[in-house]
Length: 347
Length: 169
Image (tube, rainbow over all chains, first blue to last red; front, side, top):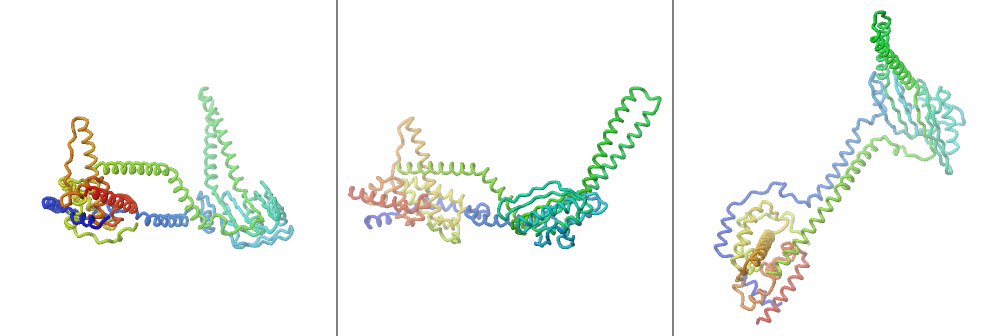
């Protein structure tokens, strides 16, 4: 390309005629103010917003996880279960510092009070008491001994073995899951002895207040008894018309049935309160105390996991629509460009 | 492709910007349409639109001249579209009204003739890169294509222009 030609093009640059210049000057008189922030927002700034949103999500997850009410500490539990008449359910899985119990043959280890002492049931108050213990033992032989020993402890405390699963499939590895029923009054002693069967890697106590339920049942029984007594008294009357007598007899029958059911419920509640359930897991596998659920860190992880699931759900639901929108946008853009190219070639 | 500095200085005012770049926009539109009176109208339309959009103009994203050329191009394309529709309507009804091109004032006759044989797309790339002296990235931004595509298009357009000029001479 000759420079002369380019120079000629540059030299012959069209200049705006004065009339046009005046027209544009007149336009420019009304200059608008700067746009508000949102109007100037650039999508590229999302690059900054995205990490900030991630940080907010992590912080929110941590705060929620750390302040959740359903995670009570050992002390919280005692306070909650000690609240008279409060119908509360508390459950916590404690991270336990590994404690080596003395397991020597079949000799019963003494019940000792230490930092793993279980939360005691409140005397004089009906409670559903559940405890879960996870213990690690050194090898399969010790696992077998500990399993037998656990059954003995339950029996010695007046309890029974509700279920037992023993599994030792691989060399040196094995686990046993035992569910024991022990009188609530003696469960603390039983737990103390059970905790000596291996290294405690986790423990959980759950206390459900049954006193309110029992009190309610008792008052319903008393009310029904009064109703029965009134009906019997009315039926003893000799002047009672026959049709009324039939109706009252039907009511009396119903009331007696109801009374029977209420008494059975109360007996069941009392029986439930009398017997505690202990879920004992014995394993030869190494379990990191920190890996056992229930810690604050685990709650933070849970919340973050739920946030991730929610995000994934949104992406799955919105993904196809976003993809479709992007495809439509690209198609329209391509079409517009084709039209522009054609127009520019024609003119 | 690098973007302009993030904190580019904001032009003093719309009036100053319009004054500074009026000839550029007008020249670009003259090349694009080859019609000075039409280019005048389109230039006025361009600055009207620019005034409306001025609040959103971000000098960090493009220079004022590039921004104005983008608006001018859109305005011209809109006009081409409306003309196309009008021609189609007229073709159905009567003989079309041809546009008299008079964009070549100031050129030698052989250059004027050669430019007339180029398409609007070819003329506009010459206008942007040679007449307005935009760099490759600025021209690419106006045309909505890559800088490489701008170079290719410019090279073809100039070769064609030179060829036509040599034939006309």
